Length: 475
Image (cartoon, rainbow, N blue to C red; front, side, top):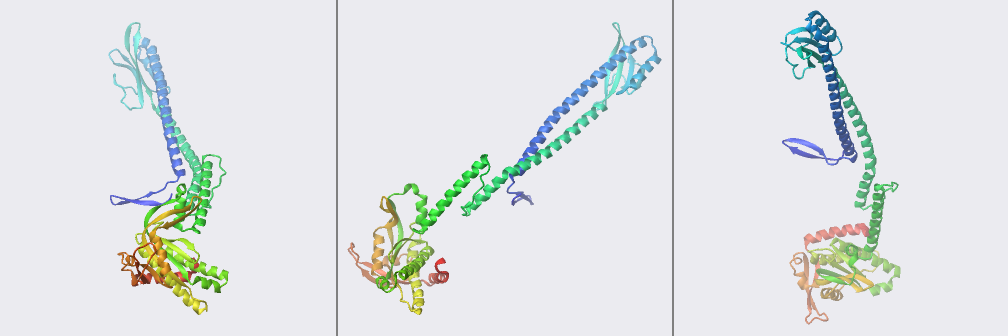
């Protein structure tokens, strides 16, 4: 019957079903329709039976009393009481006649037998007898009245038997109809249950789930439509999965959600950007085989991807030995400034840990330079009509790239204004750095070097680094 929920009313706890199967509903509805139909038909039949029996009794009663009146008029004229008694006794002894009587014009009983009401009094309502009266006439003269009382027990027995037959038939038809309706409901609801289970599987991400399409009715059409939808979702999931390996998850979602608006252009956003590249990469590439260089870049860029995801950012692009991260672009992030700086600090901490392992293994250390900036920038599809790239551009982006180029190995440089921002200054440990001249700007840009995070933030970062290095590329 499914799960239940509880309703409390006047201190009494009721447990009502949340879900009633279609088979039960269909069986109950058809049973109620059958009961109602049989009850209506039974009432009509019963009323017709009662009317027919009443008509037959009335006809028999009128015929009997008229026969008594006709047979007794000569005896009344002759005042032959003994013959009248014999006539009435013979009549009462036949079938449904409970009593009979002959009265003179004054109402005096000349002869009687059995159950007869006194005088002109009728049998009480609801009694099991009916009284019929007929005047005894000779030519134009009324001699008296003939009275006959008939039993209604036979009518009642016939009506009761008919009622029992109707009730038994109604019960039998209702049970058989309800059972047939329940079986039909189970048969019809089975594909619906499969459809519900398949829908839940699709909702859980199991896009490979399919329904059998053997039916040739509306449910079969529904199953085929569901399978078509599931195939479409599976293909979209596969495309999104493949696309997310080339662009960030946020960019992949935005592209797939706006397939009808793929074109050049963008929107103005307030976001942060991080540039990082490997210092001394050219020298390192000259001393190592190409496959080792590729493996080294893949290892570090995989760690960078996890760091960006941890701080709600995404990889915008890889640039040889460098990488560009964006924060607050593909998803709203009011804390994008701190997240961008923290990702740079976390990257330098991770590199320091890996260098200890590399030096212990006799391998050369690796150093990264990091530049961070925040501000207004244009985010959207850039490039040519036939070759698009979702990225960010603007003066804030260019400054971050200049800061990376000016940073030394192991440093994280950011504008001094960013380090003093209310969302950042209490959560980082930064020192004033030199002013850096930037081409296109009249004044040098004051910078700061971010050495570490505040203790509370540092503890969470170290815990994440430990998990990251322990899980490797699967972190």
